[in-house]
Amino acid sequence: MKIRKAVIAAAGYGTRFLPATKTIPKEMLPLIDKPIIQVLVEELVDSGIWDIIFVTRAGQHSMEDHFDSNFELEYMLQQRGRTKYLEISKRPTNLANFIFIRQSRDLPYGNGTPLLCLKNLIGKNEPFIYAFGDDLVKSTVPCAKQLLNLYQDNPDVAAVVACQEVAKSEVSRYGIVQLKKGTENEMEKIIEKPSISEAPSRLAQLGRFILDHRVIEILQRQELGKGGELWLADAIRDLAKNKKVLVAKIKGKWMTTGDPLRWIKTTIEYALDRKDIGPDLRDYLRKLKV
Image (cartoon, rainbow, N blue to C red):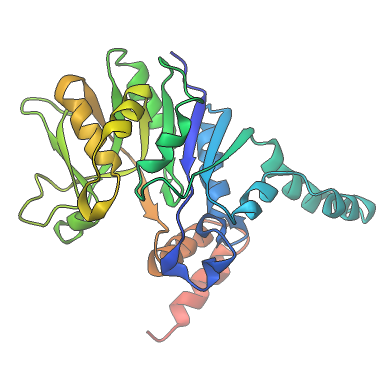
């Protein structure tokens, strides 16, 4: 089945970025001149996705506004003949078909919770991409496309999980995967934020998945896990007990923007790739006495 729908989890509070995120969603923080969330959307669109569902919370209307048209701004730019900036302003609106749904505050906290909002938006036999709103991947082939390629080659698969190896010291930050013996990419289980001694490998899930309604059904009856949160990793672990779950070992550089330091590092990496500002930034960084 061709996958044309994606869900982006963007309902967090961004507490590590306070006070900046008191009024601005974390996903709207800029990578130079483009919000994090737009970079993610462009990856999905480049992978062939057309319908994108955002799961947000109250107070995140700026995200909806960003992907809507701004008549006053566009009229001003048109009247002044600033065609380049007019096209830049209109681009987010025309990228895809957008749907916004709010996550109820009555639901538990956790990265599996946004999927509970989708029970009437996803068909029983409809696979979709699920993406965390603060994970990016710099790659030649878009990250989501790499998952889709693996999915299309394995019609019997129940889910696909994007992964990369991380340093041993980092395993307690992520869901860590154990592969079935004798396989290259079939999941045996996944453990959410294990200690170094508990971690079955250094293969960490990153924020891209191909799922279907079976995971939503598991989450609906799942008990809260570590830290009192509803973890997607726990649902995928249960799915893998009886169904085939594959790991997509992503080629590219995984860049997370979940905390200030990693956001700054990601911003610098994207800026260095820019022809208009990259050379000057590189010269500036060389001159810093650090």
